[in-house]
Image (cartoon, rainbow, N blue to C red; front, side, top):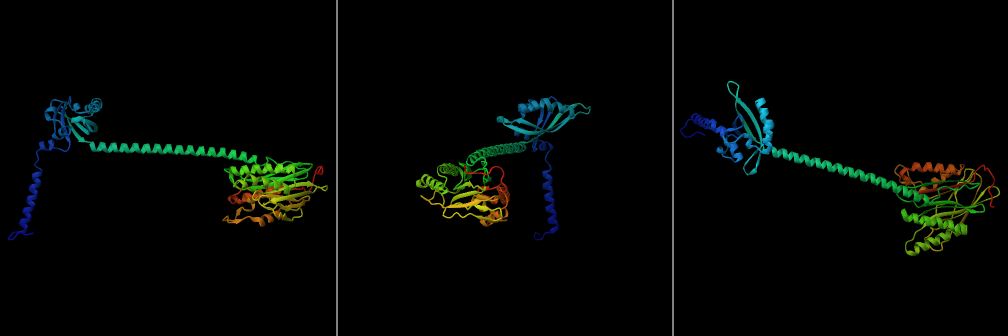
Length: 443
């Protein structure tokens, strides 16, 4: 802006001259003032360390008076015990040898016992003859740097501690995993042993009859409820049964055990299939349903006797169980109707109906639990294998032996994969197509 009546150029020139004069005034500090008020500490010492000169900045940092230091103390006297020891053993000898040291970390003593972390740089001043005259030292306050380093160290220790804790947690988790696997293995072994106690370890050899069995446990961590057995009644007669109790786990195992031993005991007293199932129904109903905790099972119980022609006469009764599949030597197959059978243990005094068939040479009777027909199939596991598919399978394997039927069914079940999610028991009884050895009798 121009003042009234003034020359703009002269006004601008006068402003510039004022700024230059003010800037020049700032540069007129004396060398002594620049030394004494520098933003770092300065001191000069004789070669023996006696302080000859020290600036005000360093005195303020240490809280000392000039007369307490100049000519009365050595540089090492301003250091902490550790700093003094390092100065005497490393700093001073290296300085005498090299004539210069830069950025050495030390600690100086301040009033009140406070420690001042500093970075020290020193240079030896020599005379014209090369003799050392004095030591000039620059001191920088390293408090912020020390705090930063300490913070880094703290964070580093915290990170290391966190890593160590994470390692310990991983180790504990791995130990827990291994322990859990060991516990599961022990549990699986115990359950397998208990499961084996609920079914025969092997089927007995029956003269004039081929037998085969397969048991699939859906989960190694849970006891299954399927059961089967084949045993002699004496006088050439044999009894068999296959069934499935409700539920899983220990309660199902208890029910399975009671069912198996009741069937065996009842058959030895009266082997008529309907009588055997009636006894089991009474036992289960009195034991569970009468107490308000009904438990039940599905089961087929049957007997086998042999004719003079080597055929096997089968009489059986079903308590709510899927019908047996009869496969004939001529390639035919069909289910054996067992009407009137109800779940065993549900109602008191249940009635059961006898079904009969004769197995000629080459014929096979297949018993199974519903884990087979209820297996989920197809790409989406939405369809059930079902009765029709099993019947078609039976017709396709009608001319094979009992062991071959079970082997083929086992392969079929393996193809179901995770679609076979229930326990499944299979029992096949067949008359050999070409009998060998003595003809079985009923004596």
